[in-house]
Image: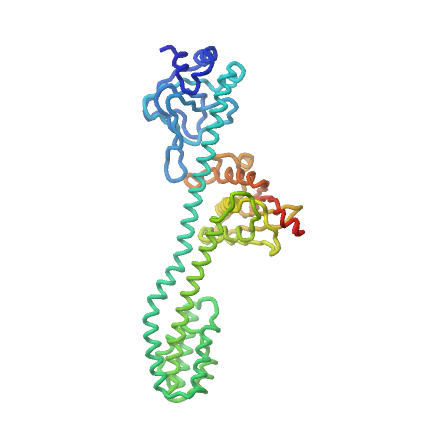
Length: 468
């Protein structure tokens, strides 16, 4: 079949004038591609426009978990360079899926299409817009899935410690409760007076009220147990109680007051009861604290994902959003011993925007800062009002952004991270979300100080209250 006739049967170009199709046929090169053959490799130059006459071609992109098919062109489609396109290198390998016939228009001839083939130019511009919408949608989806994976890993890590604490406490509690019951029976049989029982209760209460945060070192623990054993020996009490008492916050001074109130045979029973009760209360406190941490993490995740977000721009609490984002990224910060600080004034006015999208911005910027900061480094997050806008800053003390990357950092697929560590879409997503929220983003970078600034509009209600 004549090449012009094949172009006339092409699904995308077939309605163009014959003269313009003849122009393509005269300047194009017909190429046969076998299955598995790479037409354009990732990062390599795109030699021109590819008119798919028969067969199928797919582009495979690696987002860090292995290559997956991003897009497939079939007979009747057009790939490669299009008029007005800024495409230089593809984000992945373009591979033939079956025997494929391609008419290639060299890159040098593509600009001439605009002048010599106006009808084809119109068709190709529509094709380019459809392609841009697809890549934008696909890129946003991939970045959201990557963020979801990071969030899931961070949440699993954050939940591990409190869940383990609850399991450990529950397993210990049964034995401690049995000891507490036996100690209570012994105390009841000791015949102590109401005043003496009140003295025991006072020391027992101190187990909760006097508990201080922190963990004793092995040396400090051994010294404390030795001091308590000496005290017990001095008062004629079995020094085996030193072990249980060591795990309580009771002091030697408190024991002296107890011994003054309860002397004789009743003192061992009082000490045993107090140690058992303190142990139970301590375990219950640990379980409560672990449950509180889980509850706080769930609240932070709900705030981060903003499950109840509005479909229109609304006042957004930046203080809560930034705090929740830092919370869900805590595991990553701890893995590199990075200090993360959040500085927001209590009277910070709400910004006008989409809460879920703003949290996605904070997540990408803070995650990038954690990647850039060295082990033991710092990431500073702050927000304040400047010239009738709320300015959020994310600063890291990493090596800085290379000059050759700085001008292209917001372009799709541009990344400085190793293969498998970044998609090159994070800052492109940030740029588009910033625009959608009627905001601006600024960047300054130097060794030991890279700063991203997002300038957000203040909600009208806050302006009316004079918060600006």
